[in-house]
Amino acid sequence: MYEIVAKERLAPVTTLLRVHAPEIARKARPGQFVITMVSDHGERIPLTLGDWDVADGTVELVFQQVGKTTTHLGTLEAGDRLYALTGPLGRPTRIENYGTVVCVGGGVGVAAVYPIARALYHAGNRVHTVMGCRSRDLIFWEDKMAALTDTPIVCTDDGSYKRKALVTEPLGEVLEKGGVDMVWAIGPAIMMKFSVATCKRYNTPVTVSLNAVMVDGTGMCGACRVEVAGETRFSCVDGPEFDGHLVNWDLLLDRQRLYQSKEKQALELFREHQCQCGSEQKEHVHEPA
Ligand SMILES: Cc1cc2nc3c(=O)[nH]c(=O)nc-3n(C[C@H](O)[C@H](O)[C@H](O)COP(=O)(O)OP(=O)(O)OC[C@H]3O[C@@H](n4cnc5c(N)ncnc54)[C@H](O)[C@@H]3O)c2cc1C
Ligand code: FES
Image 1 (tube, helix red, strand yellow):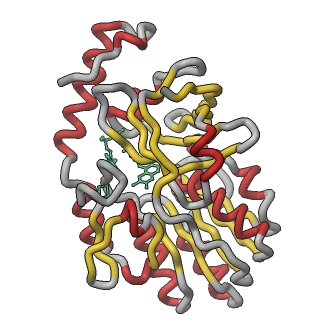
Image 2 (cartoon, helix red, strand yellow; image 1 turned 135 degrees about the vertical axis):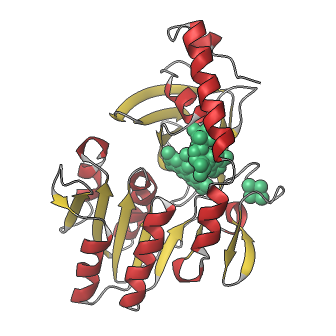
Image 3 (cartoon, protein in one colour; image 1 turned 60 degrees about the horizontal axis):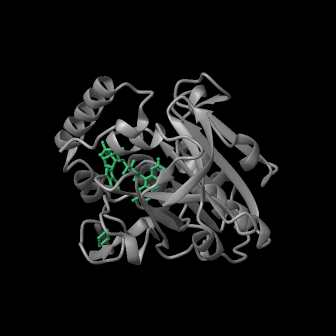
């Protein structure tokens, strides 16, 4: 059982949990993730390691409440415990001095790109950052990202904060100026797909972190299979980072939608149970069968 030592609401649907997990904190590297189970009846979900502190023995998970399990996770408070937490999983980001890099984070993807941008910065790269969200209330870690660059770019789809644009627009402008050696783009699959298309126009390499549906996270079940360079790869053990130019995006997007009706049903059942039990009685939030 892994104790939650702190909880912070970063945005109305975005939560940070700091969890006591010294073994994971000790081994964590940028680009890696964990698989957690909220309760013994719950499903496993992957979450990126947003940050970690070896001295404290804690890791930070930042998640958006999009469905049943993340909604359940959002009901936990400091002092509560996660049933399971496995990691660090996945191949770490290859951190080296590339020269000039651009780190693009879309939505909750900012939490995933931040430790990568920080490590690239400390490795001597000149870092440009681009972060984008649908609207102002979804922005978080603007200060942490800005500390790594002299060119922080923040945009919102609806123009409610800073620049009104999708991340691909400022990314294209930075690439247009030239001199960029490498791009990281992390966020929703559709955002990564179009960021890759932008990089292709400027003939620039781009690394993405694929959010394929995962179950065991150890290469045993095949749930996370993706197509890269025409070959099947398991995102959990071969990734989650891949060369964005080689990913079959349409297949990834199709596979992400595979369980949509069941996911909707699970969330509805979970909310029904929450209402019946009373939201203040967290421990009585049952996992619907
Ligand atoms: C390597 C990796 C790292 C991730 N890191 C983060 C993170 O740091 N923060 C964050 O908010 N989200 C992250 N995600 C996505 C997160 O795992 C899903 O949002 C979560 O599983 C949704 O579960 P749910 O029950 O709340 O929603 P559901 O309603 O069940 O699902 C909503 C959508 O989330 C995706 N999803 C559902 N189940 C899984 C699963 N088992 N594995 C992967 N995707 C799933 C599907 O695309 C689905 O349509 C990551 C995904 C991967 C693969
Ligand atoms: S999640 Fe099972 S093989 Fe990757």
